[in-house]
Image (tube, rainbow, N blue to C red; front, side, top):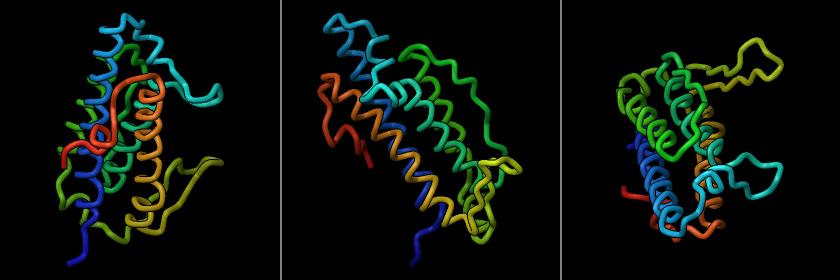
Length: 170
């Protein structure tokens, strides 16, 4: 039996957003225990030209909600990108999870050959010939890049997390 678009997207986004939320909790506890200014972790970068932790989490949630919305053929929810704290990031992840978990398998699986266009009528317009091409070659890789980078930032800054924390519960 072939895997469905729903099975390849929503449960994966859900699992990884929960694990991202958990590693952020560990980072928050670490900062408190070690008396580290949380802002130092939230603004941490792996290299000066990379986005800080806050932006990595924002982008991970953006790709989860955006990819899911486009697969379902519904409007992508707009977020303000004004998070300043761990609590704000937890709230963003919770909001994203609520949105993606509200989408049904029928919404996601019902249009497999639908072309998906992102940033229409702009110089950055991208066209994907089907939902599966969009999900497998764009949405999931972008999402995993930002989740992985957020994890790496925290690990690099001494948070005691490992592979089990990254993978989470499945």
